[in-house]
Structure formats: C-alpha cells, structure tokens
Length: 267
Image (cartoon, rainbow, N blue to C red; front, side, top):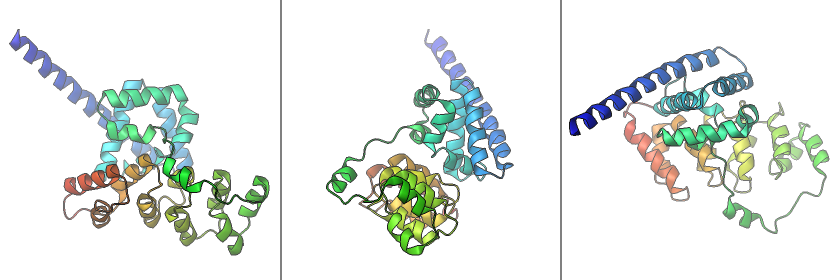
C-alpha cells in the first residue's frame, strides 16, 4: 500500500509538471501575440477575451505562469502583468462570476501572487479617517471634468487632487499633462486609493519608471497594485523599499524576496 501511494504521488507530481509546462507554453504564445498589438487597450481586451474563453483551471494556470514570468523579469510577460492591474476593466470583460472562479482556482493551484492581481481592493480605513471632515470641491462634477480637459497649468495644479476618479481619469488623458504633475498625484498622501489604482493601469503613465516607483512608495496605494509593480523596479530601489517602514509589511517582505531571487547583476 505504501508503494502504491508513492506511485500515485509520483504520477500526480508528473501530471502537475506537465500541466505547468503546457500552461507556460500557452502563456508564452499568448504574450507574444499581445506584444504584436500596438494599442495597450486592445492588448488588455485581447488578454481578457482569451482568458474568458479558456476553462477556469487552464486560465488560472496560464495567469499563474504569466505572473511568475513577470516577477522573474521575462520581457514578454511583464506587459501582461501590468494589464492585470486593470481589475475593473477585466471584470467588465470577464464578468464577476468568471473573475471569482479564476481567483478560487488560483488559490487552489498555489498561485497566491497571481490571485492578488484579481482580488478586490479592501477599504482603506486609515485613509478614510484621514479624509473625514476634509474640504470638498465646491464646483459640480460636470464642471470639474470640463475644467480637467483644459491645459491651464493653474487649473491642473488644483484638479490633480480631486477626489473623484472621473476627474482624474480626464486629467490623465490631457495631452498637456506632464510627468511632474503625474508624480504629484502618485506620491501625494491626499490621493484616494481608487485614483492611485486608476493611475496604475493608465497605459500612458504606468510605463514611466518614476511613476511606478512613486506608486509603490505611497502607503495608500492598494496592496495588490504595489505588489504587482515591485517586479518592475531596479534592485537598488527594491533594497530600499524592503527597509522602508511606512510601507505595509507584505510589500517590504516581497521586495526582499525579489532581491534574493535576482542575480546581483540583474536590474
């Protein structure tokens, strides 16, 4: 009986290795196809459609392989990992039920890091307490969105701290917006977590290294976003983040782990 149990365990291990190898090949093929698309929004849409059409377990394993590859710095996998930060958009395409099923499969298969990308952001009670009694904009939402379309620096300086995600989304699309102004949004303790999450999947700005770094250093950035951005950072910055006390322990610990797993010569 003991020998039979060992044989079964060995076969199960081989089966899992085969499934992971197959999922790795599917992930590589999928990310290569995505890289051939020039529009980031089309890349995200195509990724979500492919995941939607796969059986849940297969989709979860492909996602797990993409996230592992992204953490190791695989160039074709990293852009796909950034797309996973757009959780709201993924939910719109996949549907809430499919997204929930994917999260469950990722947990069962041991892809905890990949699951973080798709998990909803919990309420940030510390930020909410900080904002209690704070000053609210006097203008209507429609007027603020209209003002956000204007390239006036004075208006931009005031509106980048607007608490409404729709205003910030309009500002981020303003062609006159500069990286310096985006960094103010990313690093400010006044910026709501939902807006930091919006910035993290804005294709024009999240590709900027300093924006990624500012988001990770902001304690109010949702945990799944900070953890998802860590693999994109340089070793020297990861070493500093690993010892930066204001950040959540989960962020510091993962930064330490990535540093340990990378070779000293690797960025």
